[in-house]
Length: 88
Image (tube, one colour):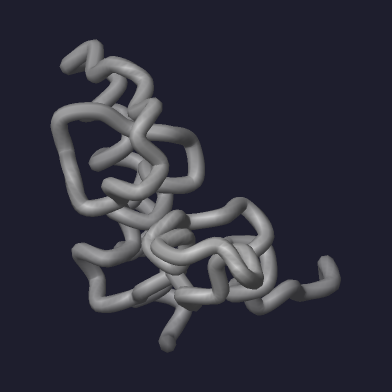
C-alpha cells in the first residue's frame, strides 16, 4: 500500500469505529457472532472496520479442541496481522 492508501484506510477505520461508538452500540457478549453489527466486542469492532477495506483480521485459529471458536476474532489475531514498523 502507498502511504496515501494506508492513511485513507486508517481514517476510514477510525470513522467507522467512531460512528459505532456514537450510535451507542452495546457490548457483544456473543463472541461467536463476529458478523453482527448490532453489538461489538473490542477486537470485533476492529475486524469489522478493516473488513470494509478487504482486510480480514480473523485468521480462523480459534481455540484448539473447542468447536466453533474459529469465528471469534481474538486480539492476538489482530496483533499478529499488523505489520509492525520501527519508528524512523
